[in-house]
Amino acid sequence: MENILLVDGYNIIGDWPELKALKNNHDLEGARDLLIEKMAEYQAFTGCKVIVIFDAHMVSGAGKKYKNFRIDVVYTRENETADERIEKLVSELINVKTQITVATSDYTEQWVIFGKGALRKSARELLVEMNNIESKIAKTVKAKVNKGNSTKIPISTEIAEIFEKWRREKG
Image 1 (cartoon, helix red, strand yellow):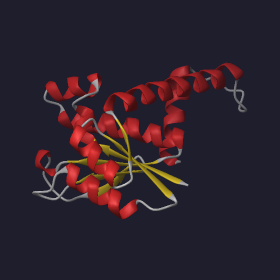
Image 2 (cartoon, rainbow, N blue to C red; image 1 turned 90 degrees about the horizontal axis):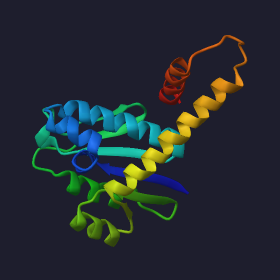
Image 3 (cartoon, rainbow, N blue to C red; image 1 turned 30 degrees about the vertical axis):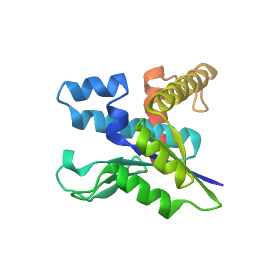
């Protein structure tokens, strides 16, 4: 079964402390970039396809879709909300072989996607899961550094983490 996570980008940014702080300091682009990077880690770790949806009214160049860190990033069209695009994607993607989960804390949106057969994950639940994933990744990198490597060239933890990040991006 294929698992797809649809992420309501600005809803998550407005809830996660680290992303909210960037947004409140007038760095919405930095908050978007950090969310996308974290969702790339989520996708690499879980194997779940991730699509992040942002409302176009916050960004120029409405209606765009592109890949960043091997995840799909969608900006809605003008006069289309992220909720509307999420509902449309759920309807298009859901089938007996695909499980859709929507990450949003928007209560109304949760009920609409339930009605279409998707599951929901609140922003807080996704944050807890992401923190656990980052912890497991750090432990894995540390274990590999402590174990040594096949080249017998000693590398620092910082360099090992950079290599691990590159590996996930190249997937």
